[in-house]
Image 1 (cartoon, rainbow, N blue to C red):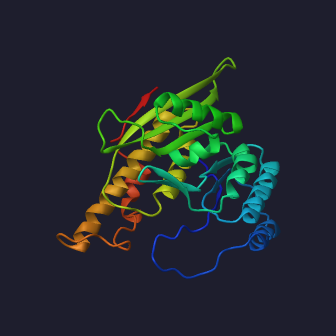
Image 2: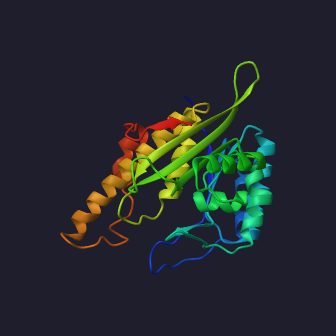
Image 3: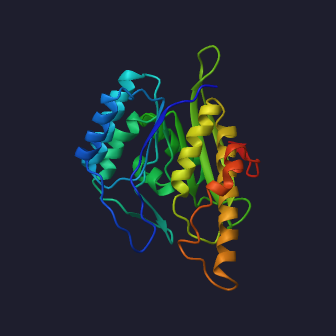
Length: 279
């Protein structure tokens, strides 16, 4: 199989107490893109975007995606709309609030696949989801905004397996033989891990991109491989972190760096340990 070209336009989400460096501006992104144009390397099959704090940068990203799509109408745009999360049951934004209308009006309508968490899905759709039925309604609202595939990466919906599980939900609209449009919906129960990791959302979006490329019309399999691979990585990471920290000590942020390289085999060929059910 020929390799597919992909470009990732993602800013850094700082997980440490201290960090150094510069934040890329829209003008600097334009300069980088002009360099790609000069070298005639602007035909991509996939674009993945994530965390950013600036509307002008987001506008420039959308401008570039539209240009890339003119060159390749089949380009697939995967958007992780990183805006906020829930803490102790309350939602909060960790980006400026003016990014929300930008996502709703410009970004999500361009996307083919989006991977919000529960809070992000709720603020994009403009309604809460406390039940599976309400979650399906939220995903339908997000479909209507543009994306054919919506995966709510984590939610606090009730799990039949108990309080120690998170619920992931997915919905994919597709055309089947004969031209009919159908919607595939799935649900996954994921064991909670008593640790805070940085980068799991980025990793989820990247692996979902890869597995939806391999299984474009089978959301169930794509999500099972994505979530199972992530679970393998998280399990290895926490095990290594506890060993490094020592008995009775809480691992540091550095010790909880995701063991991605060490999990190469599980990323490339994950054993399915988290199964999805069709809803």
